[in-house]
Amino acid sequence: QLQLVESGGGLVQPGGSLRLSCAASRFTLDYYTIGWFRQAPGKEREGVSCISTVGKTTNYADSVKGRFTISRDNAVNMVYLQMNSLKPEDTAVYYCAATSIRGCSSEVSGNPRLFGSWGQGIQVTVSS
Image (cartoon, rainbow, N blue to C red; front, top):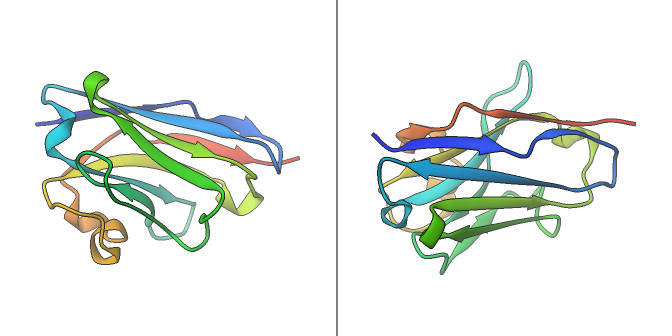
């Protein structure tokens, strides 16, 4: 099974930036579409962003468009989520996840049930 580990979370002030990283092991990452999801207490897990196997296509939730950027470096089995202009409503546990489904349609990028491999999650807190 593909193993994923997130890093780079923490506490940041509104308007600040964080860069999350997702490291893969056991299998090469280039076979997988990768999504970032987040879950706040009492809320359902929601799709944040998605990137296709070689980064040709990406997708973003409306709430983060223009602020977040997803990227990947398959040579080192890494996926990144650059988060700028952070807002308190971005506070959540963030997860990276992998699926063998190709492409980042809205149906894929927003549906956590389609992703079979998950990281442990990492806390992002945006607060003054």
